Image (cartoon, rainbow, N blue to C red):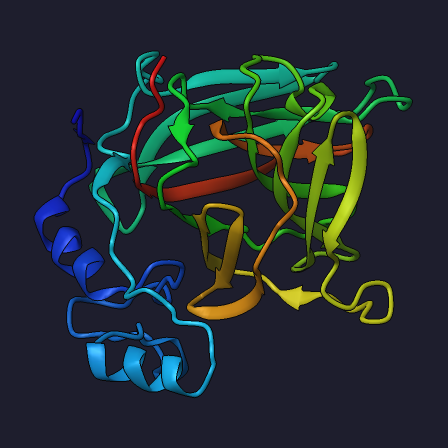
Length: 290
């Protein structure tokens, strides 16, 4: 198995990863002594399984932490094409995708997504981000953890961040492919709040998986440094934000068995430079067979 490990302190985080259950991410700043919330502890032990079976309940297999296969970002500098490829769609006045120094640790890097759109075509949505060039195997358990910095936006209108999985590789707009699954954080005016949404596209048909109370809940959530954890086991999905489960689906409805990972920001026209940062990406699972 090929393991890509490029961030400082990986050994410590491997220990942390072993303590986390599949699908539950600890809150940012959590260190090796942290444990998942009590209601998110894995079910294990033959005695529990026997009790469930005797009561006619479905038996849940013990959670197994998938192997670490990707950990980013290591140091400031250009994107390494064997790890990340830039994606871009529609016009920008300015745009940048790069790994810059982490202000909290100058030896570490963080992904910077920067876009300015004043004077651009107001009929289009602009997309900017990265895609991992190797697909991941969705027939085996897969857990993706991303640390996002919303960067204290003064104006978050028409700004969003996206984690998208698709069986199609593109350096343009992955949402134009016929099949994908995406978790979005969509900016709510005026600035530092956003609302989550979980969407999918099957055979070209856009479908809602969960909008988490929208439009009934309009203020959105206060955004800062956020840890997003997406765990897939077969078609089952668990999604957590800062260690708190947002949703769990026995069948999330996607219909593909391997997927490329996209991390993107989107913005509309006529905005000054706005930036989002990804401090960390960790993927546990398996690469798909080419």
